[in-house]
Length: 420
Ligand code: AMP
Image (cartoon, rainbow, N blue to C red; front, side, top):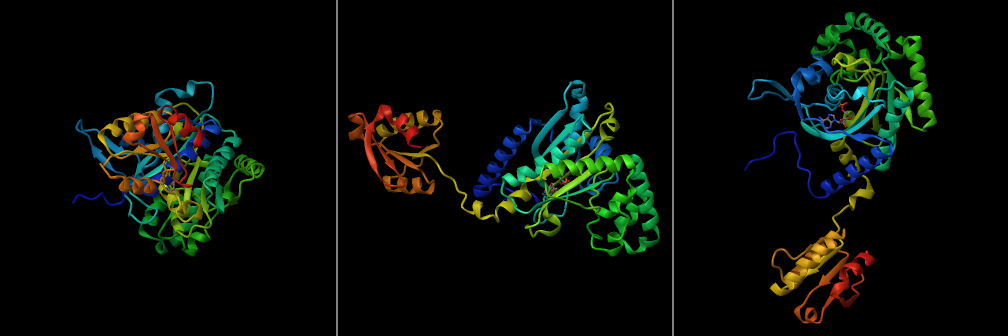
């Protein structure tokens, strides 16, 4: 038997229903915030991720799915969504348009990680990227959008953990402070952290191995190294979040694993979720240097990404969603070949009128069809039999109250629509 690759999932049954529900809530909310859908390729040239996510990041060092295509080009399955969207923004010269670009995406990402609950090799993220504005209001809007989507899904006890890395000057000062602090203590950190001290000391604070180490807990805090401008910017973002009534906590340990962030960085967790380090449902940050680094013009960017697989895991614990099951509007029942022709016609007319409809498609007898209708939780039944059809009649039955009446076949579609 051929099985699915390690770290991937099949989304079926009630999980698939939840999945669709989440996607609907996401798209609706994105539209109310005036974000436009964008779809970029699942694979891109490897260079794109090396230059954006960063050569020294765990993702690029250990986790990307790389391959040579038949034309000997280095390709990578996207590990995240920002790089592709920013590449598209530059390549299509969207920066030349007069308004700020507000994009949202929803798609699979690939990271060669050690699979565990909430950590997959193929997973799905929805996210946004706002390109072209450095207004602090946009930072607050992006955070509130992420918060309000999760809130609309009834995920309780949400908290935004937020921090600022500041501008280049602040980041450099902070980096120096970290090097000074960690150098004498490096023997007590993991092998990766020893490497990180040389390449990107900020990453030490992100370490999954050393995360409970006292040395990390007592490390210098970003906030203390922000210059005046960066500090004022951060305070403004927090003020706007207060106005938007978003629960947040300033958490100096949020530094984010990717290379491209500056200023605002954040993640969102549900304090009710007990999945430990996998409790972050989404995360994001500002990346004002990235567009220039990818050969675009001087511009600004900020975005977030949320993991749908993780959201589904949380929703499954919520009472409201435990009962989620498939329901159809109408099940059309018939037995003979002549009745079948009428059934086909009625089913098609109902479907074209937006009625969710099914019929006997396995040659079942009436008893089997009643059972199938119950399995599908059909609200109404339409029963066809030759005798009635000769008189132009069909039976419409309420599958809950069990009341039924014979009605004119020409009126069945209108009657069903008005009964739903
Ligand atoms: P990141 O792109 O690493 O900032 O992650 C943003 C969000 O994507 C996380 O908060 C998770 O919800 C989700 N996520 C990241 N990596 C994985 C993974 N390997 N499996 C499932 N979800 C993930």
